[in-house]
Image (cartoon, rainbow, N blue to C red; front, top):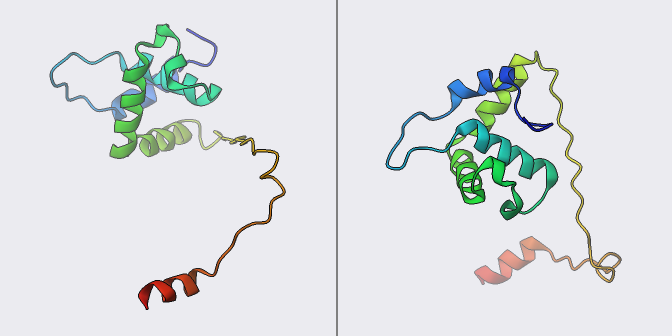
Length: 121
């Protein structure tokens, strides 16, 4: 178990919320794939850099996107928050590097109402 992998308690909360229908090829281990997704989200690394211990990176990215579209992530986060009595806090520390010449450039703004009026005319 890696440092930030799901604990047994967290897994016991999440596992009942996951889809159980299996079609075609047997599913990769959900816990392993979830740990890979969480590793990627925590590090910000490209999907292709997910360590091999979490399985193929394509499985992680495909399952992340499929579960996002199906609404599983909201249910998972809500269940974990309830399990920890609301003591789970998440801080997003995203930062984006801006090109040095774009940082202080004049913003090109236009009046969206005027633009719509011109397009309609």
